[in-house]
Image 1 (cartoon, rainbow, N blue to C red):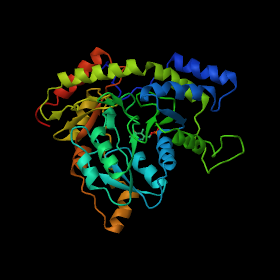
Image 2 (cartoon, rainbow, N blue to C red):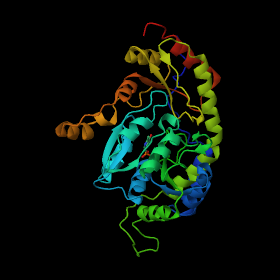
Image 3 (cartoon, rainbow, N blue to C red):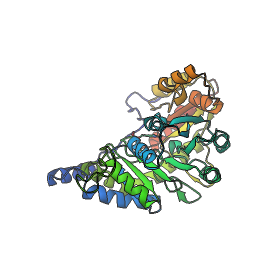
Image 4 (cartoon, protein in one colour):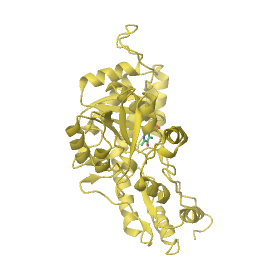
Length: 372
Ligand SMILES: *Cc1c(COP(=O)(O)O)cnc(C)c1O
């Protein structure tokens, strides 16, 4: 048991340091706060993370996914294959464009889309496949891209948790027709709120820029119907500061995860496996508890170790999906998804952890013992 004067270790710790504050104040003082030169510079700099792809900044990761689906023409009558084991945003954007989410099971090790299940779910209505690089682990993009090519389908990567992750040297966000990133405060880097779309196709990038700003390139010469999901220059300035620190933070997350995987030895606690060729950036360090998870979480909290379940309810069981499926007599068979939702717990892995924190986390998990 930790002594009572030890501070609890938070599950996540967003950084808003002096540099972020100075950058925001600099832009505020300039008086030029809406989308402008900071956003352009942020896009240019972020492009280095995704093999030089075009980058279009928007106000959230959800907007990034939404605009990308619109830009590649996904709409009513189309199906998009998505994992149910993800944040609701992954499926919400499919419904927001009027298409249907087709839920597919995950691989138990990576927690990401199972390529064999993807192929089995393809119908004449399938327009796109949306792998989610969950927790910062890249999905099996080599196999998913091969399936997509064989069937002529677009691949839309939800990389909102995976800034800097890669498979066999190719960064996430650089595989598919497009990729999306979130800069929400708890993500591996943030811009207060914000998001980025990445694409190799210049025409798609232009459409994305139009969609984010009322369909205008020239003011009041609207070319298409668009929204306003612009990022502010204040947010972009914060994002640029964070982007410059991302590599160092990622190395620290990887080192923290390596320490935990080496030192967590409790039976009935399964540490996160790594697929061959994968660069996992540990947005979350997620273990499986084979036993009474609620009791385990309560003990961790008592020991001052932050913990959380991402996500306790698979998307297909959330009301806006479950109710219409029930009415239509549609049932998804997602055993690995259900199992993961019942077993996972994420532990602190953020770069602010010190050696003492890591030791405390491993000790608290090992103290769960054999009687889970
Ligand atoms: C955070 C997240 C999103 C949405 O990003 P926001 O910036 O919060 O809109 C989408 N998908 C996944 C997997 C996420 O983790």
